[in-house]
Image 1 (cartoon, helix red, strand yellow):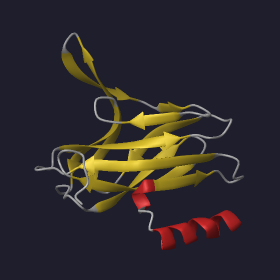
Image 2: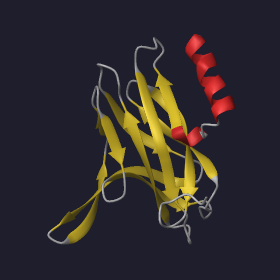
Image 3: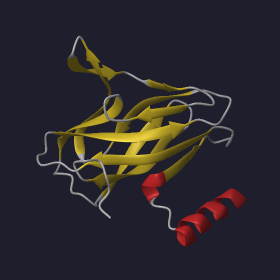
Image 4: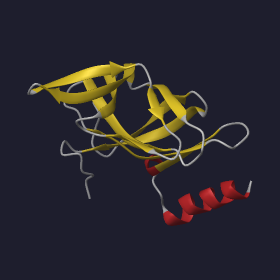
Length: 155
């Protein structure tokens, strides 16, 4: 219970944005994931948008990201982008492993969460919830910060 009060105190007094850190606990609290830097670029249309983040697994037990979900999109899938023979390609991923002791980076040009058929455009400065589903940690709600097209937050 003490870690809970420390987290609440930190958020209240230090002002950590909800999208900066989410911690997932399995029922026995032995499995913890640290999720940070959750963001997406603003959109001009409602076709699609990508969400980027970092998932750190400080434990000795690996986990697997099974998928994501948000009310902001009709469909949300895991993707890997990369260049092959000079052509950018995007390949859907069924799952993404989060190995013990490692950090998985979802970033432009690599892994990302693709939101398709958005319910409305993403507007710079807004924040919306996204649920990440893990094999061991279960469902974890994080908050996506919407940035400008450059990927930078408006100051």
